[in-house]
Amino acid sequence: MSLPPLQLECIRDYRKYADTVAILSAIYDLLRKHPKMGQFVGIERKLERKLERSDGYVTPDLIALYDTKGLIFELKWSLPRSLDLLEKEIKELKKYIGQFSNWTTPSGQVDHQDVVLVCHIDDVKRVVDTVSRISKQPDYGFLSSDGFAVWGWSIVAPKQLERKEELRLSSEYGSTRNSTIEEMIQEPGGILISEDVLTYLRFRFFFIRQKPPIQYTMTMLIQHVFIAFQPGPEREFYEIDTDLIYERAARIFFPSWHEYDADTVQLKRRWIREALGKFQELKLMERLNRPNLWRVPIPILRSRQQTQIALCRKIMNSILKEIKRKGRIKVKPIRGRKRERGPLDRFLQLASSG
Image (cartoon, rainbow, N blue to C red; front, side):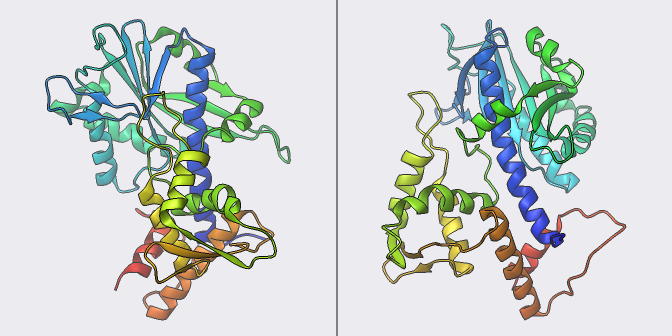
């Protein structure tokens, strides 16, 4: 039976984020297995701008070194459908151009750094068209110069009804100045990550720097955090505060995947707060009178479906009920025209408006 469009988009966003985490993990794994590509430096490691204030820094998703040159990877699980917002996102890549003073080289600097934007294959055409247009502007010539590249990623099932999946990275625009990387990415079919490696990576890393869709955070909390607090099947609920949820989530279940001197964590506190608010909105848990104290039922979600699918169904039903209550819009399928925003984005905006 086919799922409603809102639920499908909710599930699709969950999977795109999960797959993007796997992409970052795959690039990390490639660097570890192919040292000629480059030396892994760190994930979300701060690069300090040279000759600027002490707080002038950027935080790429992943950085590496090859010879005396730098590699910067920026991953996007989702990009705006609005061309204006997409252009703004592309222009922000300029922050990675210039000199930084704390590369892991004897001098702290590199000869130059290459920048690779990695996005879903569905976003590639819009990204490449936007990059090509912006690169003609005086301040953004770096987009058409050597050392800037756009890669696309896709998850491919080779044969129908088989559970096997393959992840592919492909070159879509420009190139790096790293000959080893270019030799690999320019091969027919790009760089292939097999199912066994992909499965391992999915169980190792869970978040990237870009904020996840709320249904993803909620799923991770249910599957990895809340279940650890359940005192036993004889109890109907337990009480827990936000600080303890964050402490367990950020320090034990999703600890930093950075180098030893990193000071950031995978799962951000603000993402947890937002997810808890959504649990309350969906009546899956209750906020108690004491600040930041929650009553969590055991189990928090009763369904034979996968957690993310069940959550997306509840989110969709909540949105539609709110829209119906306000009498703002008749829900019906829209065909034959392009939308700047996806249906889930549009309905979320309507549901939250006064």
